[in-house]
Image 1 (cartoon, helix red, strand yellow):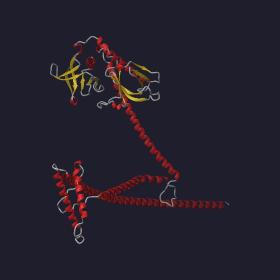
Image 2 (cartoon, helix red, strand yellow):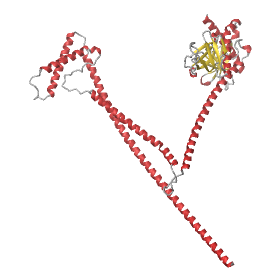
Image 3 (cartoon, rainbow, N blue to C red):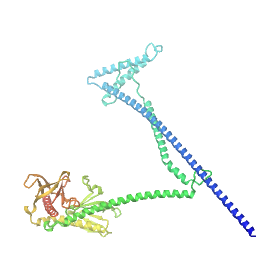
Image 4 (cartoon, one colour):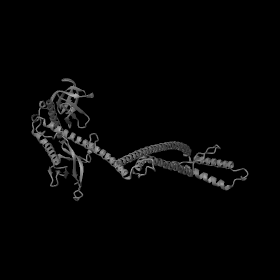
Length: 555
């Protein structure tokens, strides 16, 4: 039994080894078959790529030949067109020349009527002789009658006399006279008739239509070629699955192809949205930087005015009234027509600017640009206002009352309305009380109002030059040195005074601009205190000279 069991065990081991060997051989055959299949696929892909390449080369070659042929046709058409145009121009020139000569010959000369009649008769006889000669030349001798019939003679004479009389009478009306009759026997060149001209125009129109049709077909083919690759890619992605035996190329399943196509479209959408967000972010950054720059300029104006020492400033030069521009968008209610209903009184957005004693408003912000000289939509003079107060309405609404009408304005919110009302009331109080304060204040002496000293002036090529300046009688005089010859002056009447690049020049530079923006003076002091001293005295002189001039104009 043990021997029998051992034999069975050996036979089982032998069968297992044979099965294992057969399985290994099967695997080797499978791998060999796969390699052959892969090689066949690669060869098929290579052949298809070569075929596509050859097809593209053939298409490019055909396209180049077609373009060359079209270029030759266009060149031929242009040459024919130029020739026709040249011929037409030549004929027009000849016609104009003939018309001029006929006009010269057909104009009536100064003289007696008898001489004009003689000239007409001679012209008629010449035309008659010429016509007879032409008839004799054109008709054969066998068919000519022995004597001319009386009817054509009378008709020819009547037509010639009639034509000559008509051309003689209406020559003064600048109408085209008859062509001049030459005594030579040469036959004139035939002119284009209306039918021939119409035929020529029809031919040109036909050529133009053919050219447009060709251009359109060329454009369509180029557009198709542009999107051919895109359509091919889409077709490859969305194509159905096929067996490996029937096709050499491996094609993905429909679900996988749809997934790839959706991923492709999602990536395209994400790239577009990222580009739009980047553009939006840049635009918001630019707007924020512009607002920050405007706020910084206003803050520096206020700091400059706050730094003025009270004992050196005139009593009524207070807060931020002088040389400060407040501007921004507000809504203005249309109350010009009182008969309009409440619904018709619409709000209109305007750009408002508070400058000196005037509240100016424009239709757009771009109108308020220096050098464009565009008139504003309206001006509210603060001298003529009676009150500036809030309105029982939603937040941000207030009105400016004048004897003629009330201007109802709406700011962005409550805080911006308070800012506008504060500056408007300050400017109104300042300019309304300016005359009374000046009349009650003691007149300043010449020693108190004038100042002199060295300042550095910015010249050409950004070079600073030291000059001696004297402030007197509302004018800033400039000299080469102390006691030297005067080389210039700057009137302070309606001039603008401001800092000049405080962030880069240590805050001790200021600039002056005249009222017409034609002259600018940039000056630099030794330190900030000296600059403030000059600014205070310049402001005093400016206010005094403006008040003096205004009082003279009023009187």
